[in-house]
Amino acid sequence: MLNVGKIEEGFVLDHIQAGMAMSIYHHLQLDKLDCTVAIIKNARSGKMEKKDILKVECDVDMLDLDVLGFIDHNITVNVIKNGEIVDKKKLHLPKQIKNVIHCKNPRCITSIEQELPHIFVLADKEKEIYRCKYCEEKFDKRNL
Amino acid sequence: MRHLMNPLDFSVEELDQLFDLANDIEQNMGKYAHACAGKKLATCFYEPSTRTRLSFEAAMLNLGGSVLGFSDAGSSSASKGESVSDTIRVISCYADICAMRHPKEGAPMVAAGKSGIPVINAGDGGHQHPTQTLTDLLTIRSLKGRLDNLTIGLCGDLKFGRTVHSLINALSRYENMRFIFISPDELRIPDYITEMLKDKNIPYEEVIRLEDKMPELDILYMTRVQRERFFNEEDYIRLKDFYILNKKKMKLAPSDMLVLHPLPRVNEISVDVDDDPRAVYFKQAQYGVYVRMALILTLLGISVD
Image (cartoon, rainbow over the protein chains, first blue to last red):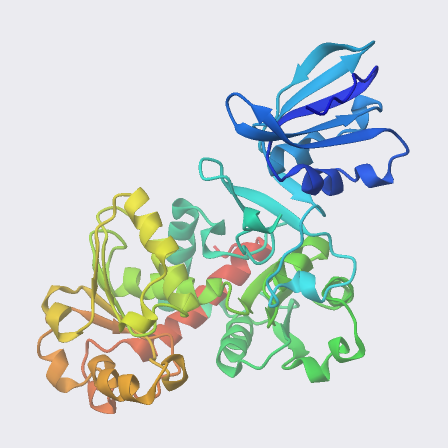
């Protein structure tokens, strides 16, 4: 079995749905950070069978919890200091997200208006449905 | 500052106030003849819609105000590539209130975010057309005396008709409503509407033939079944007559049922129905002017004693 070592300072995102780690990597814009990132895919998990894990060695304040909550609010966020877990951050569904996903409706004003931010708002908390603020097109999470 | 983007922007109580005002305008037009003297309405129509634009302009002129604007994108700065945000900032310097129609969904909302004056959504693509919904509600309330305890039949293209979806959403806020959706399979009401009704425990039925349900209706809201919506010509020919309202079908309806239509009517209501007192679609166009007058006054914060 593959072993990835501990990190000293940063965060570990655990219980990521298998296959979603790269999507989270991009949406959190980790590719723009100059720090160590370990992407573990298809790790064995008791409750999920398979899961992904992300380990990022950076200041935890650099993590956008809203983006993470939008993608999957069941992810466990462990904050690491001196090699130990010092905190677990609780994720929630953000009321709105800005410029994380783009509206795919060709009839939406976002398709032509210059520099208009793409904003999605939480329309149904129970069903976890987000809609474009402008045209109300539903976002399909399978497109993440 | 208040804008109107969606018919649900106003609470049921606020709508009651708006409709009371519209009914007062109907009864006392002279009292409001100078209410907007010195005020200007800009009609920014990025796509042609003669009826809606003229209704807005008539409303402002009835209030003693003036109108300016453009009636298609080709004659506006949009043809030079100006954004909606920039256009509304400029229009805000020229007018006191703006009615905007745009083919892109959400454009009036973008305008409202940058505007120095109230913006009314006069139709944005297939998304919303709130003043049509307010017109429909005012017509029903004025002629039926209530917006609750009604059985409403909606007939024709229930899949793509935005006026139908908006009206159902707006009426679902009132007590004891029952909906009957009359359409061919191809043009059935979308699932998200029926799910919303189920969530709110509002009864509804879906049927194919108009005649079957006519005796039960308080309101019949007609829409056009367009040939291009069908997958094949055979189905269109087989079904189109189901959705044409004529004198014979009107005989099945209660004596106090009302027929509404957002217009333009093409052939879905025979002209021989026009003389029936239950056919109120032209009155509906008149109520459209009253409700737009009430809306302009409300958004400008003008009250007339």
